[in-house]
Image (cartoon, rainbow, N blue to C red; front, side, top):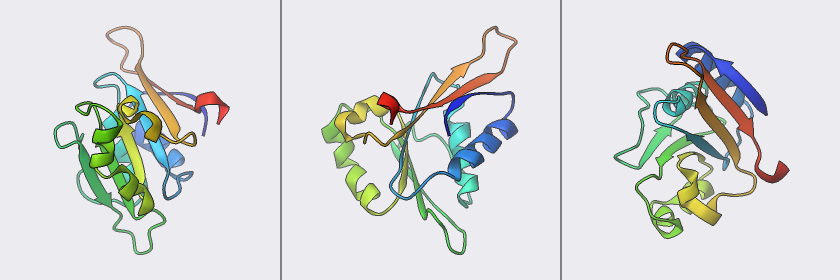
Length: 151
């Protein structure tokens, strides 16, 4: 999935996330970029729901990593790992929280502040950028799916 999408609601964000979830495979890394309150966690909640995760999905700002297991009978992706790397200093810190272990287990990593992971982010990573629409009364969010270096 590539392109720029405009959403007006949580429901539309979840619908877009569900479409994106259909493309995910075990071991994928999804880099979420955007300002505070732009919709990164709402998007992740939609991904989780589409992948069969039950239970509450919240921002991992303070705990850094949250694991979400699929409750589906035969899940295509058994583990969604939501990471917020803001409070980490670099690749060594990211490795210490289990980056490679999660990937080797076939988890999909959804990563906020992916720049902290440096060279650990594979070229195949999918990038999703969130931007607020213009104007205070405009609650629209622009979600851009793109690849780095044409990948």
